[in-house]
Amino acid sequence: MRGDIEEADRPRLSVRAAARRVADWLVMTTLFGVVAFSSMPMGANRDWAWGPIVVVVGLLGLAMAAGLGTRSGFEVADAERKPLSILLALFVLLVAIALMQMSSWMPTTAAAWFYERAAGLLGSATTPMPSLAVDVERNSLLKVLACGAIFVMVRALARRTFRARLFLLFFVASATLVMTYGITMQITTNSCYVGSYLKKDGGYSSLTDACVMSGTFVNSNSFAAYLGMGIVAAIALIFAPRPQPRLVPHGYDEVESVIASITGFRLTLLAISLFLLSGILISASRAGFASTVVGVGLAVGLLMRGRWRSRPEVVRVVVAALVLAIVVGLFASGALISKSMKTHDGGNRLDIWLAALHALRESPWLGWGLGSFADIYTVLQPPALTLANDLAHSTPLEMLVELGVPGGIVVFALVLLPLAVCLRGALRAQRGLRYLSVAAFAMPVVPILHSLIDFSLQMPAIEFAVSALLAIGWSRAFAAHKGRQRQFT
Picture 1 (cartoon, rainbow, N blue to C red):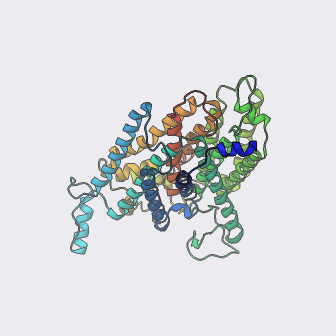
Picture 2: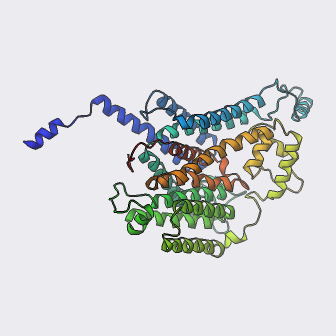
Picture 3: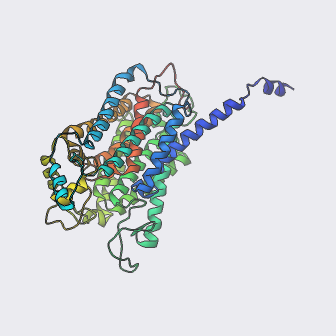
């Protein structure tokens, strides 16, 4: 009888409220799923892959603008107003630069003689403009807008700890699937196929041909960078506290919790980290391995901040693990050692960089158009390189060539400002929630560093994930803590 009374007194969820809660969950999980698992269709690096993703992101943006996904909406904290205003101004400026490059009323640039040559060959040509390929620039701009929308939406969703943690779990699952697919293709086709796409020129023979593992990505370096992000996410989750931490006499310490609570979940994450590390080694990506080591080192260093002297046994474990990883990376993978400064298509990065600098000198202020590097490279390609190349193998250099020096600086600021905010949040976060801020900072560091000498940050699957992670770190950095915040909400 008493139980019946208590059940009757318990507030019941109305049909409308239940439907709203289901809709919120659908919006959140769809967005997180689309971003985290966009790596499955060839890294979303094809029009048929990233195009639908952009459409879904736009529809989810409309849903969140209508009030679904989060009850707090897109509200801005007082401390967040100034940096967020600067970030939005930079984003608008970047879009404006891209639009100006596609405008015929812009001043004549170095691209004018291309249009004059086209008019002489074809008999007619469009009015000269800075961009060499308007259709390509339009597609690149759509990806930029999608990254901005992802940042805004995830920033609103990640205020709740559970949701930020859920995205990390989604990403670890995605990296595991990418690696599992890589193993499958290694066994079946010697890693020469991604789906029905043949990664090598000519035909394929199962007896003589073998390619470097790249999972669902065509390029092994982007594959390594993605797995590196997954390793950092798994390590951060290993340091996460239990959902309901028990009270201890001298306060809560997540490092002590990790040592004292060797759970099946943490052991699984450790096994996943080693599984992903093996994929990086097999991929033969030296830069991917090095950037992963830096990302893991930053994550562990920030999580252990303030505890190095008080926990010497943990220091020994961390140092031993890093030494083991370096030794394994240097000696366990012959492909990692033997791979030189050659790109996947046989070109030399130094020659490509010199050609890119030549293009930058020709048009330093307005660039050649967002996404137009391949077009200008066909003209300035060094005679020593016989194969075509559509990327600079250095994202910062390619941005300078395509957008000019002013536009390139805007792009750098758009990445570095949120990254600095994420670092600030990682340094100031509460101990029990530090792992979220640390992951949001250290995970993007892996592809950002890697993109200094390659192009992993230009893969849609990676740039979408980086936008979401920076949004999580941004949101956590400006989260308002009133009283004693619950560890999981």
